[in-house]
Picture (cartoon, rainbow, N blue to C red):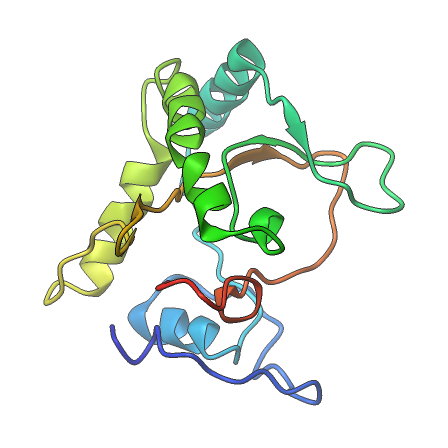
Length: 172
């Protein structure tokens, strides 16, 4: 797994190897981390009933934050925390909000009969059975937040979350 998570440079002239939505495999995940493919799709990740469960939980708790996305009439709403939104702040500012972000996350999951996050962690552990998968921690600060929950039915912009650019001083 270490090779998949190394920092790779992104070239503006880079071309995707494919524009297809590839399934989650170890090889495809590592290609995604190397910016060789734009996305992965996990078909059947959640049933229709599980999707309804997630939407109901989001509605019950309320997604109280919004992204400032130019040109969108309905910008994405969410709970949680990203390094990107704190990119111009200090580490202290980011980590001061981590516990609240986890509380928001747990409030949504408490309304559900399943956990998409535990399911995803299980899939990642299957890809790398020889490794231990844990939530990253920043020395001197504690655990990161990793579990944003967002609603994007109003649209969004094509983007990549690349911490080597938006969170350069962080361990992740």
